[in-house]
Image 1 (cartoon, rainbow, N blue to C red):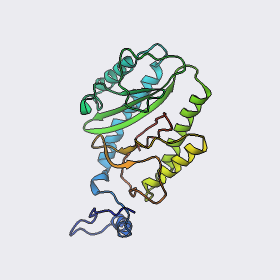
Image 2: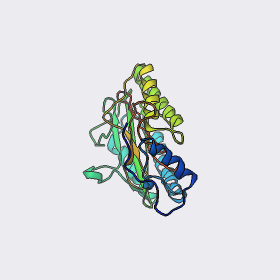
Image 3: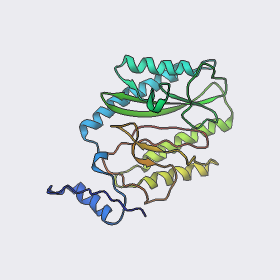
Image 4: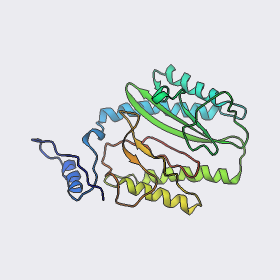
Amino acid sequence: MRKSKINWRVKGAELTELDKKVLSFQNKGHLVPSRELIKTPEQIEGIRRSGVINTAVLDLVEKEIHAGMSTAEIDKLVYDYTVSHGAIPACLGYEGFPKSCCTSINEVVCHGIPNDEEILEEGDIINVDCTTILDGYYADASRMFIIGKTTPEKEKLVRVAKECLEIGMEAAKPFSFVGDLGHAIEKHAKKNGFSVVRDLCGHGVGLEFHEEPDVEHYGKKGTGMLLVPGMVFTIEPNDQHGHVGGVH
């Protein structure tokens, strides 16, 4: 078990009940978050406001997406809506990324780049992944869409990936562990005949695009970072080639 080197205790400060609880886990050798990962109520409210725009962007995509549409058109919808509401699409320019969202069709796991040549066809499944910055606060979510009628296998993949997200959210309780989420997600995926992509994971979010902890979608109960009230992170299960994410 990995031991944390983080000094949770603030020198000279009186210990709160939260401090005592976190320190009790740290003293047992568990990995605990740094204090910087615990958001204040004001920061959480800022992240929520950013999340309202991020969700509205995906709602707009859901309303407009159709066969015959290019992924570049999806990107324009995301950009126009985001900036018209006083926010910034975080993907645009991030480490050289040229577009405002990621569009990943069928076998593409994630981080697909929108372009004019990629045209949606009947039966495609596509993940649209958006991150919004509003007043310096980040909100990150994606949504899977089925274009028209698709195969039973693809329908099942989309459904199970969403179920994995919901199961992960249920497992994300105060003073549980990141490994608890991964264990629950992987168990459900395997039960339905899918495997979890291990090269990608969820992550902390809020004040930066990507923060600690890494939220892997497999693992053992009682392992990984301790989850403490005030943490904000994404859960993004990738079942074979499905990807559903959100800010929690």
